[in-house]
Length: 333
Image (cartoon, rainbow, N blue to C red; front, top):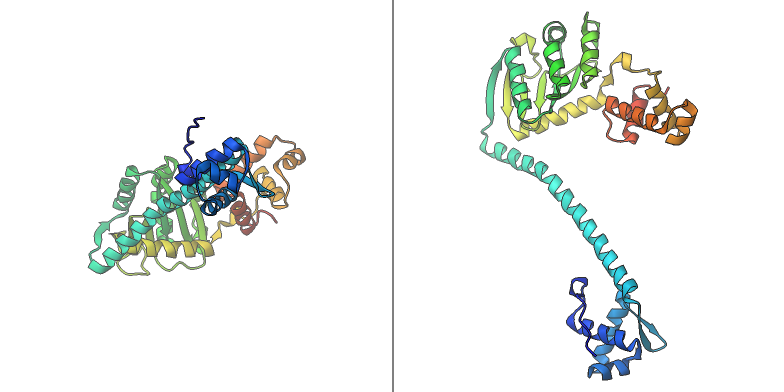
């Protein structure tokens, strides 16, 4: 009787194990001695191969006899296990691929540090600042821009002269902006109106009591720094150095994130009484979407839409982050 050998090598079977498994399938139930006779082999090495087949789950041992399990069940488990391992391996590979850009930045930072050759350009004037950033943004929109403004005069100039073009760039999704400004500048006439327009376009703004210096981070490749740390833009006629060096960009990005974590939302954002905040409050209490919908008299889809709106406004990537940020802003009070 001829039996085609199944392609089991990919599941880890050796040729000897495949041959033995086919014999077990044909005899269905047999002792080690009977199997040795069928394959014209020695019982001792055969018993080791049988132990492996039992461990793999394709053969069972019952009272000194070896019984083949149904191939669909036995091999199905092995295939499922292999698929799980392949999926896990695929996730690990995706994680490695995702980390490559970070490793490249570290490599560039090390190279910059060793050579001491930084790409530095002097930029002069507010118009050239805008054009430099938009020029980078056009190549890969939206360009993440992180800006820190330490003084009243620069913030005043923003409100009275330059806000509209930055708001338009944010609205056109050329840039994705986060800014930190001194809290005392909020008294500048007309600033609240401009900041609200900026925020509605998608930008985020927070305040600190004091801000160490002006600086700007534009994506992962460039950063703007003043001629002297601690200076403001307006005091230097908007002249600054545009630096393209991974080590500088990485350092300023880390500093910005530290300042951002310490900064407070704009005061008029602190208390929310609208429907978006209602959804956040109920979710923070552990209420599911279906129950929230019943309590508010809306559909589950509307609940989820409002939650998505809240996450966008809060700059959160998950519901958990949205809850934490909403609590920080006082929405849950």
